[in-house]
Length: 465
Image 1 (cartoon, rainbow, N blue to C red):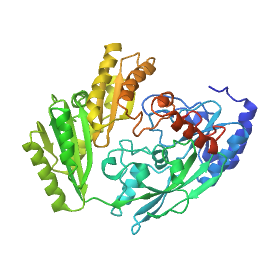
Image 2: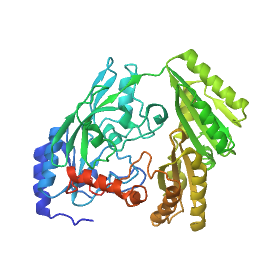
Image 3: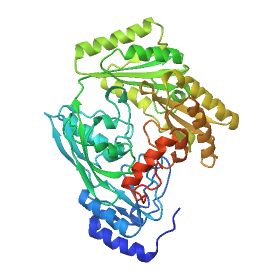
Image 4: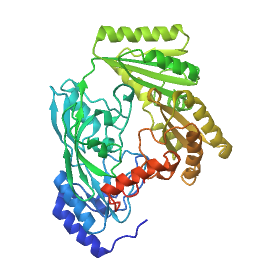
């Protein structure tokens, strides 16, 4: 951890930041003492200032001021990330994108939206849906998670199976580099091979190459049909067979799986989220979203009937109303149960080949129990796109022994050639494990790229590498 800067340096920086963003754009410690850098536990901001630029020009001035006074920059969006990407240090300032919160344009003809980086995902959803359009990236934290943060982490969510990760829905970008240079590559075209596609410098690089300020994203027609089933399944083999049947539906949009441990926690939590009685090894939520009522609903009914005829479904319910559809999704998105049940826990966001996931999860828990007999966990995920989430606790020693817990799980994952992170990003918390999952050649290429744009590690200095 770097030493805290002197009072004189901080005072000089304050003057330059005020010049860049004005009093409305600068927060001091008494203004942000209740903010946390982590959504599940209190992690205070160690920086002396939170700068809140209103546009790329102000952000450029903030970056140049930070450089002039020897400060690093940590970017904050909605602060919903769980990989430590928002963690600060005394020689850093925070750049919060919360004032860049305008939806600048929605084009019905081109089916695109032009948004600023601080727009929450849910706000974009509501705005485009009012125009009969749909932004497919959907995640549990959509009320707080922002466009800039989801681009920087290449966020996934519930509909990757159908529409892909954030990167797949991104057309153009505007951002600021580590020297204050503004890069405007606000492409609005589906087909454009004119030179390097610079949006990829910002998507998935977690704010280490540049800071996103604006973006152009793709939209699709707003689905007019939605079918949701919630079923109990007795084995992973049957879950995978169910997935193969579901994939035959053109409108399939989500295939979410909950292990017994997660579903029993939710069902017994007293929140009323109990559509089926516990007791089965897996529960699966299947959703289709489409625009042809007769074809979509017929396909979904045939899927459920065939799955039942093949003996894949032990118990189940098909939502008959919008309210029931929301209630079924609330079961899958009840991850706050980890806080109420576990208090402190270690969160994992991994992926592996489908035919390895059952063994990988079983071996991870077996290895954890061998070291920590008191271990408890909850397991769920977007199985249709290979992504599994685990929440692990060993009680009051969880925080102190997080590194051991992670080492055990990641050792098992590496044996199955899985991915260290599927959608949350590396951040600061997974950085030291990256060498297990990337070759020396890959790591060297990553360092070269970062060195080309930020050789002094000014942007998110402790993130990823």
